[in-house]
Length: 229
Length: 283
Image (cartoon, rainbow over all chains, first blue to last red):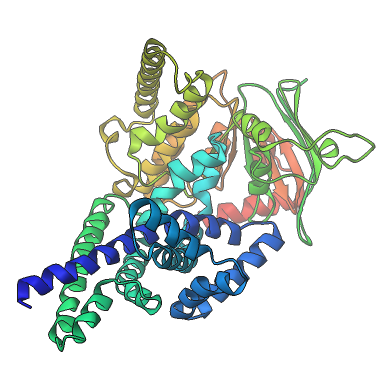
């Protein structure tokens, strides 16, 4: 295979990497916010249960969670992902959609828990005076959060979030443990044809992706540097 | 009946009793100055008036309307009234304005937006929003009405900002202002919602000494027949000159109250005498 052919072949896997990355963010960001609010809830049972869940999800290797989410429904006698598989195959001719869906769920839950702790830290770092001032001005709770607190939180959490998001880019490679053919899995498949260099070459894709994300986060940071929290 | 009547306020935080039965009243247009050493309950009293804390016992009556009654709140004495909803408290809060010791301006908004934000939100709340599938004309009319109100709010805000002497800073962000300027913006922001009573919680305590003057001058300038204010302060000279009524608090109760001449000129309580002597020694 020529360099160009290998690149195109790997790009095919990279598409799946990007899709998993994007879907995880789209699902985990709002879910993380909900978990953050649950863990800050004044209703003790809710906050306690949430804290235990976060402990478990952060305490078990992501790889294991991917296995658990993929295999446990089958053990329980209801292989939901096989159904997803056959549904997507029969409707749009897509192969192995079930694997991808299961991995996306695992990633979304895992990252939501990490995000929730970042959100919680960010929200609690805003001085109480901000919400008190807003309360005294007659604002509603939702207005206080969205008009006063949120942007300050975003500014505060950009550095830890960029860390987490960059880790996510590379963690997507874990999805190959249940045979989702993402970038590294693709490169591994080439090894069966005695081509080893594409595996190392695949690192360049991640590097470029992370480089772009770094630029984006730096841009956001500069955008929000006009005020101090 | 006085404009504001506060009766029998008690408030504890855990085992710490902060307010132990505070009663006072205030006429419309008067300035009440609260003095007393740290921990005497002045700030807690203000926070209770602004519904930032809930008194354990006591009532607030403003303009003959009972705003707060702890008995009804807890359902004691056989009353079965429901606890105030967040929405009720929010509306009652608007009767009072508050200027905080640490300004608490919103850092992401410029001076003008800090003043207009709450006004705009409240104005928007009053307008009936057209439904998602309403006619285009209806939506246009709504948008236009909103824009007109925002413009009016902006003009009112500009007036208020001029009143506190910061017309040149309307586009600056709080981090670009001095402490004194921040506090003046906070005063304009509190005035924007036309509160019946404006409260100041040690408005100059977080400021450098050379900046306190500008803020005190603004507060003095607000004094008029229809602006009722409650000021917690450690600035005795200012208290003496601006107050219609002075209350000295000690250990959660009102130790002494009267006109500034009475309290400052001829204090009856030993605690008041000691406090005033100490604050004079400070100068």
